[in-house]
Amino acid sequence: MLKLFGGSRTRASMPRWYMEEKSIDYELVELNLESKQHRNAEFLCINPFGKLPALIDDNVLLEDGSPLVLFESGAILLHLAERYSNDINTPAQRALTSQWLLFANATLSIALFVPSSREHEFPRLMEVLNGQLDPDRPLVGDQWGVADCAVEAHLGYLPIFFPEIDLSPYPVIQAVIERTRLRPAYQRAMGHA
Ligand SMILES: N[C@@H](CCC(=O)N[C@@H](CS)C(=O)NCC(=O)O)C(=O)O
Image (cartoon, rainbow, N blue to C red; front, side, top):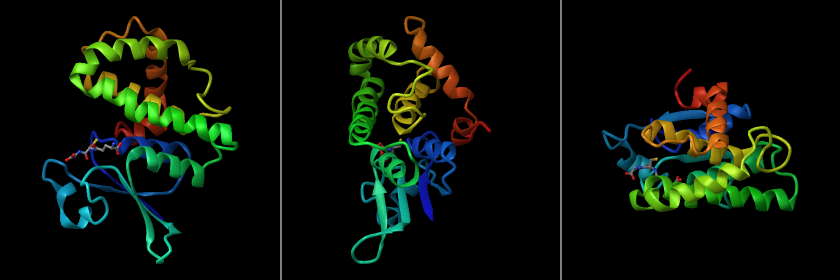
């Protein structure tokens, strides 16, 4: 069984969306950040850093027989893709998947959420991404996969967290966001359905 620890408006929406898309069974444990449930002793045994998301996968056991426990949304996404989907079939696909996951979680995330980077780095990244993305073509391989999930989830944060940002200079990104928001699995993961 997979147990995902998440909370509203957290990055747990990424692995949740991915599992919804790929019909991977999971149980969601929602923690309330406002009441600091993510700092409870019980959760700190799962993620000592006290951050969401975290995943327990008892289909995968460590040497001592205990279940795999993971934190970091990128690591969780990569594990889910490798173990529970057929997204990644070649070494090149794995390398490119890592590239896009790290781009989304490190480069794009910082450009979005760190105010000083949002001013300078963000427009440059968006311009390049607008040229790289094609709403009809997955980032890696020939089916929508975990790389798309990470990049599109970050783009999907834009209208949620930064509705004041004008996206009209980036029409491809606008189209990708529109399509993302229409996906039933995305709506379920984001709590809209
Ligand atoms: N790089 C980590 C970031 C995790 C993170 O900062 N999560 C936030 C929610 S989106 C959190 O748990 N914040 C609560 C806190 O830091 O106290 C990941 O991608 O999983």
